[in-house]
Image (cartoon, rainbow, N blue to C red; front, side):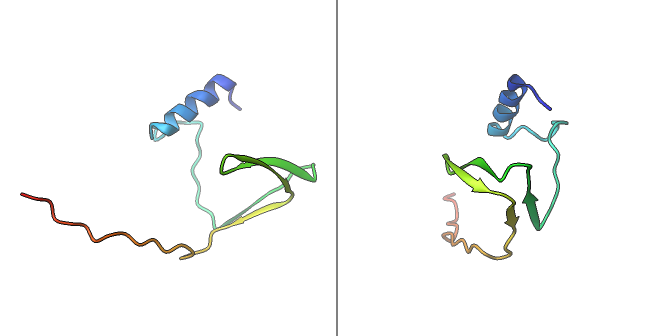
Length: 78
């Protein structure tokens, strides 16, 4: 559990990409996750919009689901 002030501090550290040594952050790898609660639905923020979500919410990692095309890097001028 963290206080509101600690939450703001963590958010600021996240924006500055400075969470490497933060003991309150736990990192884990997963292929899927299920969010459950005693409630039937919860409010969640998606792309800055608050939406009502029914539970359980299931998240899955889809391997190779997004193809990203980038330009060929140009050699730097000497």
